[in-house]
Length: 272
Picture 1: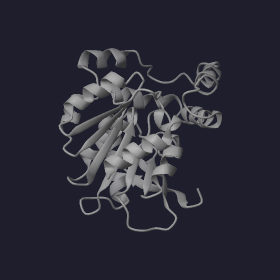
Picture 2: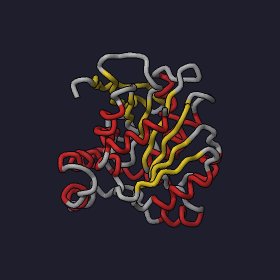
Picture 3: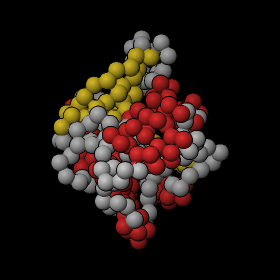
Picture 4: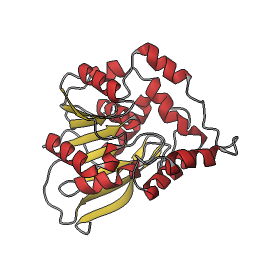
């Protein structure tokens, strides 16, 4: 990918510095609006490595680490999803985005709700279009049930078998999540988040998704893979006023990893 320029940098947010990996065409020229990508928890923006390189052929792509994950500073206490969104809205504004310089957003699983809250915390007309995949949108009763099943913290410091068990599940058995090396770095980023890596999932199931999704006014593409968030994503499409749903049921959960070119083309066509 010699025609792609990639670099790492930081933007200021309310919890400290937010780590960003950005990529764009080597020969910089006026192109489509940039795209910001938000990752599922507990990983980092590196999960979009292949998708980013594909999309960066014709536009600037920012892959953010949510506060407390990857290289971003952590909040001092357990955040709500609105706190994550506000911090990333800070970072985008710090990078110069606003109504006069709009941007598109993409998020998967936890990152889909981070994208929603980020859009809601930015000035109107800053976010032009959004792409959401694997949206964890549940009725209140199911959301409460899912939240009750989550641990308060990951037992990284108390369970001597945690690292080995997690390595086996994510790396050795996670064959639908990319090549072995990619799966390894996803495992590393989970450990890097530490015991408080559970905060991202907790924020998901403490969020009133129906109220937030109903506030979106920009065009939104929802991409559904053959995974546990298939029906919740369908349900989210019914709540968002200007939504389009595309189902890719021949792809597994991490369809953007196993088929990055195809997913990138779908995103690119919608953003165009």
